[in-house]
Structures are given as structure tokens and as C-alpha cells.
Image (cartoon, rainbow over all chains, first blue to last red; front, side):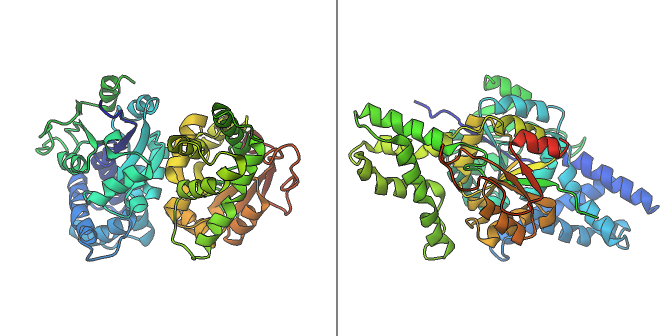
Length: 236
Length: 236
């Protein structure tokens, strides 16, 4: 008999929220206020591209655990000069850095999560820190039951401990927990730890010319086009 | 100018849920199934009385941090013989131990939290572990934004770190966070760390003859008779 699924653990950036559109919008507004012209989506992409290398140092234990707000800020300092924004005020840097707390969901995210919440425990299993995830949830109406991931487990995905500890914190065997992500590599790592897997396709995460994660690369337990689709497949 | 309150951090056992009635009910049903007569409220009280001493060893760092499910189970083993229940099956012990995941709220808890959630971040700041708090929230319809406390901070209240880390995890100064509790001593400790304070009177937590925490013992920022009363004082 198959273990029933009790909890859904969500990747957040890209899977739940459209970081590129939100971040580009805030960059655009800031640059305009300084009279600087920037390619805002390009700057959002460059900022985001610093994300994995920054976490990688921590995954490899070359550096102690540090929350994402700090890594985002370090990465921002690194890229501002490339876009002619090195000289902006500290308060504007800090405000821009916290734009990750204000990301908006995909059009189905809020409604889909509410439907899924009726049957399942909804947890975030994100590399975002607690404040970031909580503030985002308030702003984008995301009905989490519990914030797990990075700061709570102390590990960045795809370290196996990140998945194992999250399931253990819910006091559930990993097969009762399903990882929901728009990224195949996140699901590979989750399946390795015994979790169930759901791929939700987000073909615009990286903009109109996205090449990666356009389709499932394995036989994931569920494949859906949105959270509302996933909810209906799961009979919520 | 006073810092606006952004987050409410709640004590849970006694403040949000009526542990004594719920635990007594489960003890009563279990004892009946074994044909054993017990004074169920008395056994609930005795079980609960083991709670502070068990955490105290951890607070004093005589023992590494251990989640409350484990402490509850050790305490249960200790008291079962006193109530003629030493010989019950393992699965019944485990089921009884998890009765703390099934506690029911006071009559105003669910509705009051929903009202408060419109204006504030609602966090648990309990000594309960994550799974306990999440399962309880699903069963008692408690609309938390985020589960903090014990397992997330790594400290049991009233250790100052428990309060400090919870506020830091929300990326808020302590004065933007208000501790909500039915226990004056919890508020004393929270105020010491710079948090705002709200006393919600729960005169039946310890049954009909309760003597403690029948009234506020200091000039707390708010004093309320229920969560709905607190919501109306806070203009939610």
C-alpha cells in the first residue's frame, strides 16, 4: 500500500513567485528615480545568477551558514557598478535588497495553495530566510502552514540534509512528503531522499526565451501546469 | 514616536489551546479501553507538571536540546505507573503522547486569530516542536503565518535567546513584536528583551480552582479577556 501524502513542500522562487518580473519592476523604478537607464530584466538576471555561487560556498562548508538576505545584499553590491548604480544611497540599496520580500505569485499561486491547503500541510522548502518568506506570504496571499527550509533546517538545497530535516521536522516519513518545484534538479534531489515529487511547469520564470525546465525530465509522480491543476489532480 | 507593532508572537499551551480538557479527554478514553479507572484531569495535571523540570535541564545546558515530543514521551513513561497504566501497548502510548498535537483552542482562538491576521504577522513562540504546532493548527484551525519557538530558535522560553532569535528571524526589532500570553512570567521575560506585551486571561487553564495568572501582575501594554477582545483593542 502506498503511503498517503500528508505534506507538500514547495520550492518558492520561480515555482510560487515570479521573481524576474517583480525584481525587474523594482530595479526599473529605482533606476528611473536616479535618472539612470538600465536593462532591468538583464540586471535581475545578473543578480539572480549570483545566487547559486553564493550558496555553493555554504553548501561546501567553505563558509558558515548565512541567510539569503545577507547573500542577496553582498551580490547586489557586486553588481551595482556594472549597471551604473554604485553611488545610490544606502537606504535605496537596502530597500532594493528587500524586493525579494515583495515578490508576487503566478496568477494561480494564491488560489491553488488555498485549495491544496484543505487536504495537505503546506510548507515552504525554500532557500529563502524566514522573514523573506513570511513577508512575501503576507504580500502575495500565500497560505503556508509552516515555513521550513534554509534558516530552519540550516542547510541550502540540494544538500540532502535540507530535505531530510524538513520531513523530520514535520514528524513525517519522507514518502509522506511531496516536493513541489518548477526545477527538475530540485526534484532529483528530493526523490533521492525518498520524497514524492511534483513538477509544475513555469515556462516564463526566466522570461520569454527560457530554455531550461520547459518540461519534466523524469517520471515525476505528478506533472502539472499550475497549482490549481495540481489541486485538481490531487482531488482537493 | 512609538514603533508600530508588526508581529504578534503567541504562547500556545494555555494561551491558545485548552490543553487540560483535551489531554484529559484522551486519557479518559484510553483508560476506559483498558478498563482502568483514572482521575483523568489529575493525570493531565501530573503529566503537565513534569514539563517545566524536563525543559529546565535543557535551559541549564545539562542536556542538549531535545524536542518536546521526546520530553513528553519520557514524562509519560514516568507517570503511567502511578495511574495503573504502565502495561499499555506501545502504540497506545505513542498515540496518547501525540494528544498534544490534537489540542483544541479556546472558543475565541480560531476566530480571534483570523481577525488579528489581517493586520499582523502571527507567529507561534511556543516550546512545542514544529510538527506538534503544525498538526494542532490543522486540527484547531489556527491561522499562523509562521511557526517559531523551541525547535526553530533552539532555545526554550524563558531563555532570553528564545525571544531575541524569534524577533531576529522575523527581521524585526523586538519593540515591533508583541508577546501574547496567559502567563505573566512569559511576559516578564519578553519585556526584558524589549518586546511589547499582551496578557490574555485564561482563568480555566488549570481547571475550576485555578489560582495562578488570574490577573495581570504588571502594566502590560494590553490586557484582554480573549483574542477577539484583543483584536478589537488593536482595531483589527
